[in-house]
Image (cartoon, rainbow, N blue to C red):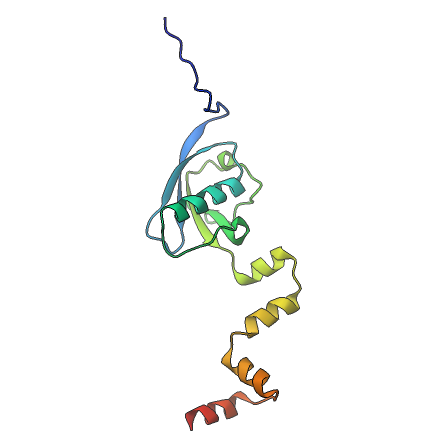
Length: 146
């Protein structure tokens, strides 16, 4: 009788299953095998690495703290990064970027830094800052039209 010997590099912890992660804005899902005891944060990290390795667009980045994972079968809140993926009983997930206001709250930065970052891209703010004057938007529109 021949006995099955487990390979040295293969881990025998828990069940493994095929996971499908759809990235919001991407063409199709990413599929990979995970251990049921893996944390959601590790699944997000693996999905981001697979996404980048495949050269998919749009480019997302690699910081797993900028993303949320949702279960596609249930309309619910984002899954906690500290939960195990097997405890959810689902195999299909959606990966989305965190909204800007959630990123600022999670980073622990002050709201002033967030407000400054948000206003710096406005052309009205640039004109006001450049001229060091408070010009009303009505006058800016008038100047640009003429």
